[in-house]
Image (tube, rainbow, N blue to C red; front, side, top):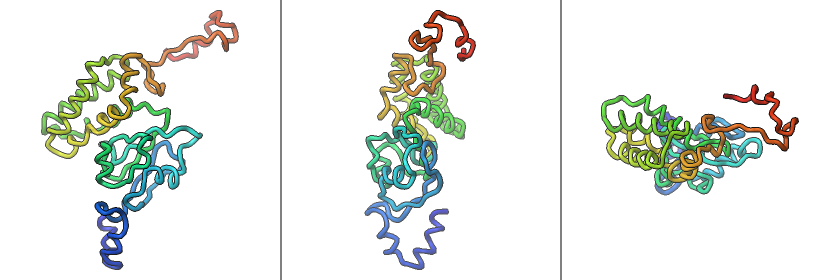
Length: 243
């Protein structure tokens, strides 16, 4: 659809007009669907080469409630998660690929400090797992196994050996799958391992979710300093806490 939409103005204004927009290797504009933890969601058309920072802060209006930007996933469910350290990354095909993501369908999901990157990887991989046609073994079986390992991490059952296995599986699925779905499905896994490995270690070693998103890893206790009974254990709060 974007290609068809560009045909008429190119015919009207000429190829040079269009090629003057964007970068040397990524010409023209790109339409993105900006969603997630962002003040201004919606569809936007931007010139190739614009930075992620300009999209998220100048166009998107930044992160709601004064929270910190954590990552953005580009390219749809098979895209990679790009961290805050790369906010000045230009949005073009080469730069996104080098960062472990892709242009893809133009999806752009913004995440804030309350997002668990392990759970995000599990969420997107669950989608691509279900979308697999099942023709080739790497995608059919590999996505299932990666999803199982990620689920174990979010529920406190993972080990450091599983972490190595997950990374090896992701690399194998990416390099041996027959079609684009299998070749890109590991992107959320590989980029979260690349940029947020400490969160995986926290889930495995400390049995804690830094973002407090994975409920199975949350623990509850009484703080004597703020308890109205000085921590003597009346039991009222226990009835309100989740099991």
